[in-house]
Image (cartoon, rainbow, N blue to C red; front, top):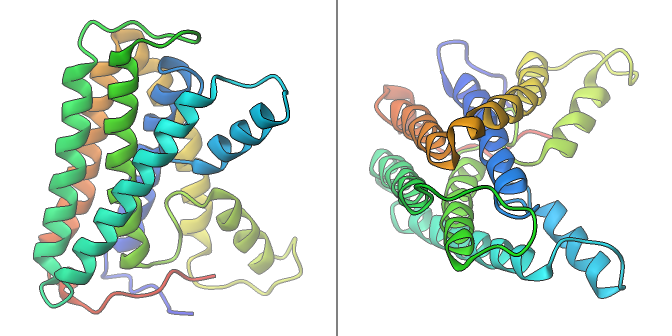
Length: 233
């Protein structure tokens, strides 16, 4: 397990980008038909419920989000592999791609009301663009490594407990960032829900700014030239 370097802003960037995850999924779940575009666990569960005839959101939304997220993750990983020797360019390109997709989703959502049932084709377009962006961003942050994963909240929670006195651990580097990451998801969900009062466009533009500011800002620092690290567990 790597020890977080206090001079490296990566842990704080991860916390900030985790908050963006909460904003984006607040928009997706409350505005686009009860689906998720960053946390894929929910979509897979919804599909399972639907296959068994249980009460669940329409499977087309979950399928759209899952397919788009996978496509974004493929693109993000291939981009990381292709630019492995040019790390700063990789980070800036990934940040720019994810942000542009979120801005495109925001523009597509102009004047679009939130919906729980019977999404329109435009709702699905916003859903797909947002999930694509989250796939690119998630693949990039996973390759980047660090003390927490920006979408694997359950794993972060279990890791935090495992290293805490509550779980019988003796503490470990990065505990405060794991705790902050868990809180960031909650805060992001609150912020995203509040922003929805002004419309999906406003919430998605804030998310785009958060991704570009966090990932792009980190890429501009000397620490971004270091070798990628595997996520800690």
